[in-house]
Image (cartoon, rainbow, N blue to C red; front, side, top):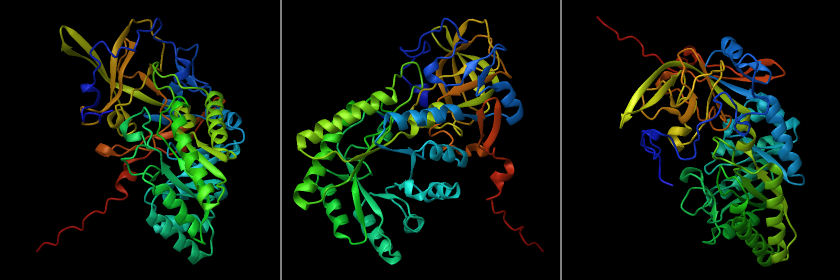
Length: 473
């Protein structure tokens, strides 16, 4: 897949009639269940409610834009993956979204945690997460990050280069530690996803190549260090993957390496992490498999390959970050302007501008990602019109939702809600154009509470070191 144009969806294949998969709804007020968190519904008042809280009430009390996090939804999804993958170690990928409250839910639902920077590790430790249930990822961990992980007693460290193996061994020796290590391998499988989130092909920054023999050499190097304890192998084929078909070749190649290590080095590797990257439904064209189907498929793949290789199945791990956080959150915006724009051949497109944009969700600009949305403050009897929801930033590619049907009477002051924004939206948020990042509001049983405070201009300017006034005279 080619890289998205700087102007994003303005240069997409879809014309003014929208993409081929988008159908005009019979009722523009209906919420498509697979796109929304479990408690989202349209109330008798016509407004969308999440967690028992009417979104107009939330907007009045917490302002817009706001990320709205459905606690019951997140907990239920976490429990679904935990139960479906019984016997696996399930690691929540913290890079999708992290805050102290959510980390408490992850721990209480019995999941482990994957982090990939010192900042993520620091937040987890600050939140009281058991370090023994934390894994540290990353292709360029600093010495300070590795030292912190060793001193905290992090349960496993996924190594990504020969330099890191040497560095970690040296730091472990200095501290008298014996960290558990997984070797990240690349299996040469191209996941059917965006170029920037496919992570198992050869020409990219992560891991050791199986095909080139680097992975076996890395395993040998870890085993040669008296200060490192080799737990097993780690593979990750990409992100936004809807079924297990892409894992079949990956599992075959990783388990073949597992068998080679046993045969040639006499070592039985106890663990295998298959990664995750399980996808979610952002629009009606998306149809991801449920956790039970994913778990059954992965079990069958691993057992089949282990039987063929005549080895015992290792302890398996998965990392369903997006699949937990993504559907549990929506973003709430207020409409500022609405204008029809001529697009040629007598056709027009309705541009709906909201008070957020690429600073709170850069994925449409970065990955050409599609989203859905709905009018959240009221129901409407107006006929649906094809609209494009855009942000407030000084960029033509600042697009929130490329194509969606909204009521023809959408107007300034209305609220628009975009579902599926729990993963990689707040995590990738920026202060572009000096716009403060939105807060995160958790909702449950009719109660809304701030779990990540909204930024203010004072926050923005706090790091700006003002120049001393010039000396005159």
